Length: 101
Image (tube, rainbow, N blue to C red; front, side, top):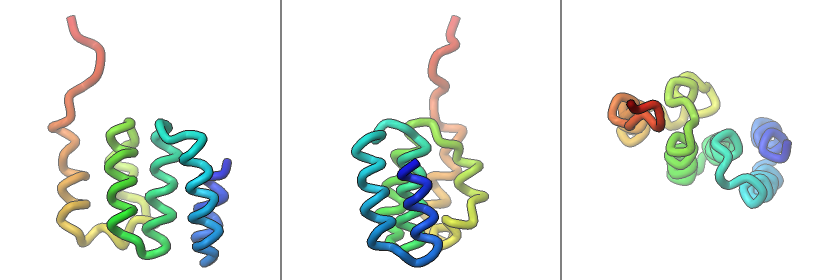
């Protein structure tokens, strides 16, 4: 819940409060893809694109969908970056976990 509160605050320009709530959410759920992804959104909405991309990389590594990230308007500030485009394009390079014979 804190991660969603942080996003809502960022959307209305309360970036300091949003960053605090995103940090609290990460303290509680640093290994939860959705929580880490919401932190990426908060950073992006605040114009902190390097921090946003770092969080997005971690969220993707935890299993967050590259496709959903590529379509999220809240990350529109990242779309022109080659490092964002490379992260989104890496989907076919990531090994599939589990499933073997």
